[in-house]
Every structure is written in C-alpha cells, then in structure tokens.
Length: 251
Ligand SMILES: NC(=O)C1=CN([C@@H]2O[C@H](COP(=O)(O)OP(=O)(O)OC[C@H]3O[C@@H](n4cnc5c(N)ncnc54)[C@H](OP(=O)(O)O)[C@@H]3O)[C@@H](O)[C@H]2O)C=CC1
Ligand SMILES: O=C(O)C1=N[C@H](C(=O)O)C[C@H](O)C1
Image (cartoon, rainbow, N blue to C red):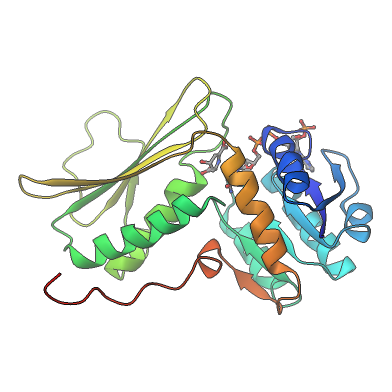
C-alpha cells in the first residue's frame, strides 16, 4: 500500500484520483488545493501526484525534494521554464511528467512516432483535439505530446515546425509542419486524432477518453511505479511494456 498525496484534490481530476487511490488499495495521504501547504502534504506521503495548475509546480517540486519522495506531474499548460524546473528537480528525485496518464494515449504516441518515421514529410500531420468547456489550455498537453512523438519520428524539433490557430488568409500549409486544432465544448473528457494526409489517401489514429478515471488509474499506476526508482525524469512510455519485436516478414 502506497500513501498518495494529491495536489489539486478538489478539482475534476483530484476527485477522480481519490477514487482511483482507494480502488487501487492504496492510502489517501491527503490533498491540497490553492493556498495549501505542499511540504506538509509531502511529509505524510510516499509520493505526490499533481493535477493542479502550472503556477503551483515549483513549490510542489520543492516539497517533494524536501521530503525525499517521488512525484507524478499531470498538470498541463507547462511552459519551457516549467520543464527546466522539472529537469533540475529530476537530479534529486524521480519525477514522471506527462500530458496524459492513460495507457491508450501512451501506446498511441508510439504508433504516431512510427507513422511519422515511415511516411515522409510530403504527408501532412494534423492533430485535432476536443475537450470540455472548462479546459483552460490549448493545444492540450496530449496534443503536444503526440506532436512531439510525430516530430521525433521525423527527426525534427516540434518547436519551429508547428502550425496552430489558423485564421484568416494564412497562406498554404508549410511542408513538413505539424498542425494543431483545438475544439472546446460540453463535457468531453478527451478526444485526440492524428491525421496523416497524403496524396489521395489519409490515415487517422484516434483515442477517445470515455471517462477521466482512465487518467486517474494511469496516474496511480505511475505513482506506484515511481516508488524506489532512482532520481531522473520518466515518462509514461517507461511504464508500458517494451516495443514488441518486429513482425516476421511475409505476415
Ligand atoms: N496528464 C493527464 O492525463 C491529465 C491532465 N489534466 C490536467 O490536470 C490539471 C487539472 O485538471 P482538472 O482537474 O480538470 O482542473 P480543475 O480546475 O477541476 O482542478 C484544478 C485543481 O487544482 C487546484 N489548484 C489551483 N491552483 C493551485 C495551486 N496553486 N496549488 C494547489 N492547487 C491548486 C484548484 O483549486 P482552486 O479551485 O482552489 O483553484 C483545483 O482544485 C489541468 O492542467 C489538466 O489539463 C487533466 C486530465 C488528465
Ligand atoms: O484538461 C483535461 O481535461 C485534460 N487534460 C489533458 C491534456 O491537456 O491533454 C489530458 C486529457 O486529455 C484531459
């Protein structure tokens, strides 16, 4: 049994997480929200799970380092300076950051990387996501994660090779760019499609989150997996089974 402390505990994800912690046979060490004390929470936890807001990140990392415990970061809308803070913290603690804790998206990212590596830059990659009306950041963390996977498959950096927020006379699409479109409405838990569009054919790789419990269960799995790991920065892909051996020829 692992004692799990939740940051953002009264939020949509925080409440789902509390259920997943007890469903998974673990102990809820407690939770905090805006104005709470992450150091006190860390002192009574074996691992912290953060689904709150980017502004909280540095104090939360500091608390985890102070208590000598690992941390799962699910918060999205992170900027470069947040990633630098995570890299620095990862010298002292095991930290897993991801825009999506579901196993389905983790596998989808592998498939996207393979598709991008197999098909040349003449195939246009567009990432479309839809979320509930309350979501505050765009593109979603998942869309960016999938964009990074596509860029990695192509051997390019996503920064400098992406297009988003098209409106008005945009001019033609830049060849090799990875495009993003974000839709918001209703109560959608999370829809992501990666469209790979070529000459007269189109491939679509999609994932639908039917309920945010999939993220909560994945986060609990990640928290449990982090216990006892060496300091370092980890990703959900580290938890998934290794890539299977290449298919036999002639299949
Ligand atoms: N990686 C993944 O798989 C997933 C990531 N997410 C991400 O998780 C985050 C939370 O999503 P969601 O639960 O829907 O959002 P909510 O707005 O429902 O919840 C956020 C919670 O964080 C709290 N909070 C805000 N600021 C702070 C702070 N400085 N310190 C501590 N707590 C704070 C809020 O408290 P208060 O109301 O007092 O401000 C609130 O309880 C988002 O970034 C979202 O994109 C969501 C789903 C899956
Ligand atoms: O805010 C959400 O709800 C979600 N956020 C994550 C994201 O930004 O991708 C993950 C999931 O899609 C739900």
